[in-house]
Image (cartoon, rainbow, N blue to C red; front, side, top):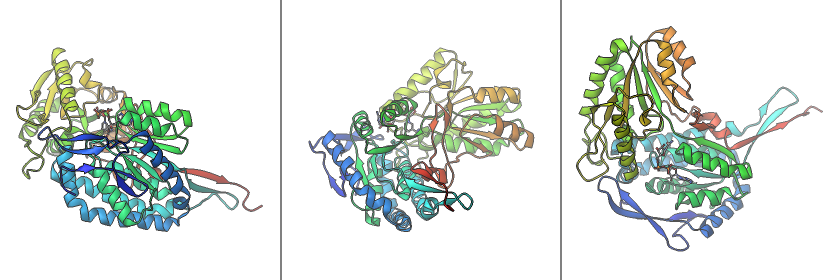
Length: 475
Ligand code: NAD
């Protein structure tokens, strides 16, 4: 598969166009030009996907778990061999650098492998003393909705545990970066996933989610995207009481304590913040720095941000590519303008680059008043705010002054500060002297408006299982 192609739906084990042959354009964010298309599913296509997933359900759920796991491990190997070319497609569609796209494919491979390796153990009965046990059972057909920012690893984090648990899936891939879903589905098919067990659709998101979730065939909804859309989907899922896993937005703080090692903190923040042009749900967005270190941190952070090489994602020298779409550029403009109108100062960046492509530079804002939108709306782009704090209580209060609760980070070596921050920060994940945190083997999920449910690790598989309680075994 090469760049600039047309991507189709995968229903009941076959690639095919939409029944009315409708397509949506795929735009290269570095050139703003249409360079491909993706089929846009109709209601009858979705009905076929539902029927095919439901037909495959019994066969897949009753297949020995060991075999399900082996298929996932085989898919990991296949994806690893195609990842080189696939990463180029992903980079061209999404705008992330080839190195970032390659890293994302590696994490998708690891996720398939982890779930394949642990499939058997996580479907085994769990004894509760001599007379009782819990029997994990697959919940049934899953509707999975994945976004464009990490379009392959986020698919892996949904599909691999669902398949390991024994559930067929209807996946809505990201229309803006469709190749990732296509490569993933091909790897699964080539590894031996039977027809109907994985179906891939693209189309108008609101039409697809409304139709799939109105069907009683669907038993689980798993979604990654914005809080606003997550709430709409949860409301739709309420009608059929479909189980929901919602990985929504974030607005992650970094607390830099007075003993922090800036030689460690600044590169760590810079690297994780500007990966994927800041379009990560757990990217740091609000930096709170002990007043004694504030000026030094700000000057080093600004220098680091200015040094980042921005350019076409396929140029090996590029460190940050374009944003994924025009909507993100408009959002950056709105957030910066609002902050500046309220008195904030732009330390670096702040305006769209004057060249073709959705390029927005690393941007640092200081003196941002508390009512500025950038402190409340998820930036989802390369914008950081930096502010000083005087006491630990103030740092924790400011860090938690958001409706989101996905990730939080801090830098200190002091055990008492570590205890206070681990306990005090309201987030699904807290990382100490380290940024990142999502891995195949551990649960990851938000609190507050960042969603509910977990992806990753044992809990990621449990999301797709019912736990049948069996009593009176010794009777
Ligand atoms: P959006 O909210 O319209 O879309 C976000 C994702 O949800 C896209 O993949 C889209 O296809 C999907 N989506 C939208 N409406 C849907 C619906 N009714 N049913 C099913 N899926 C639907 O916004 P956008 O402009 O594409 O992205 C901007 C915002 O989305 C960002 O500000 C960010 O908050 C959020 N987002 C979050 C993540 C994440 O990793 N949590 C990923 C992508 C986008």
